[in-house]
Amino acid sequence: MGIRSNIDQKTIQQLKEKMEQGLLPQWVITDPDIYQLEVEKIFGKTWQFLAHETELKEPGSYVTRWIVNDPILLVKNKEGKIKAFLNSCSHRGVQLCTADRGNKKTFTCPYHGWSYNLEGDLIGIVAGNKVYGEEMCKTEWRLREIPQVASYQGMIFGNLDPNAEPLDDYLGEMKWYFDLMLGRGDGGMEVRGVPQRWVAKANWKSTAENFAADPYHVQTTHRSTVEMGISPEDPLYAGYGHQVVMKNGHGINVITSATGKARVPFQGMPEEMWPMFEKNLTPEQLDIQSRVTVFVGGAYPNLSFVSPIHGTEGHLHNYLNFRLWRPIGPDHVEVWCWFMIDKAAPEEYKEAAYRGYLGSFGPSGTLEQDDTETWARIVESSKGLMARDKELSYNSVSNYLMGLTNVEPDESFPGPGTAYPTCYTDALSRRLHENWLELISKDLYVKEEV
Ligand code: FES
Ligand SMILES: [Fe+2]
Image (cartoon, rainbow, N blue to C red; front, top):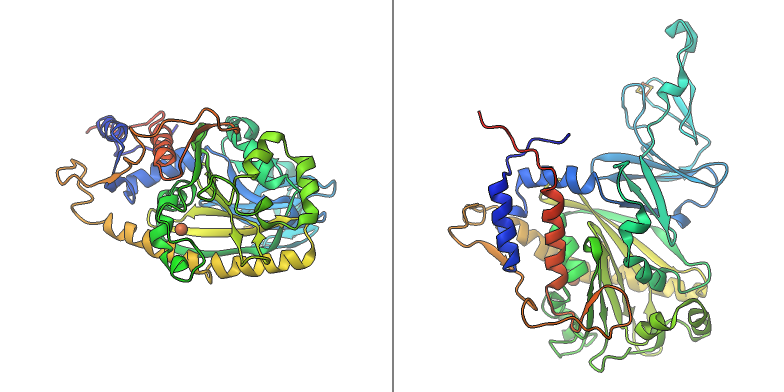
């Protein structure tokens, strides 16, 4: 099974060789044939984040989401279990539910009025037997279920591949860092507000890499924060700490201050919560927490996160921002952006942190606007004749040489994964793109010569 591709084994071999040298040919960024392979072989087979459990509070709560082009209806059934269906009516395929979220007992199709319950069962056919003669077997026409749904630390994921490895195995070492970020407070995290979403001119590989693996851009792209006195003048400031590379292309940057220690305990969370964190985290996790100023990273392929500190001394706030880069073509992403905070935090702290988040991330956020500009420029310049030359006669390759030969892993780092003693390295970016090539070239079905 698989789409026929214009990408042949010779091309895959050339990409492999370049990537071993720390180079990524620029044509792959927005190439339409590559994009088709990505949709099928990456997004059709990896675990995709759908929602946080606090978005579905009561039985009947639902949200609508997407796995690239597949519309998803996520509901909480009467027993409180999460079910995920293709959000498409079994009769003629119309998108069944067009609202973003809500609470319902049944979903009725706007086209011919077939209706379904929270289990996805077809429970009503307009005019029923009168128009279909014999009673139609309703179970055959129930909503199609998403092949796999699973959650970890309240994060609900779906997978279109029934044979994909379980979510636990897929996340692997990343679970330890999810425990640290999402499981530090009693009751875990909650989503505040609704996920913001907007379309950006960008390729998903660039956005995922920018967030998960590239603290090096911070001192230039976000220069205005230095000029405003929010960030230090030291050009190395986002590089202190460790970059951790994990199985399946997951990774995290544990950014510290120049001393290797945290700027403030527990990233500025209220002091009354510290004993709770100490109770819920392991000594190794607490060791990392005692160093960190900002966590920033990603779960492959397209889920990124940042846990920053905002504010001024005495009014510091920490939160967790998760974002999903949904590809909508080779040169655009729909960004989905969630604000999460410890359920156990005081209400006024949550509100102040939320306001800090809105000023930094999302369409109104200053940091967001800086990044969006650079992603669009990558897309623009990947479309020229020189960049699209697959023979590479113009040497149109992107440079991933940082740390390739001059940075060794730090065995003393207390967390799982391969940790490098700086965040200014392309180690994780290289791993992302190696993973990308492994996935798109797996069982490649090349177009037959005619
Ligand atoms: S398409 Fe849904 S009832 Fe006909
Ligand atoms: Fe950025």
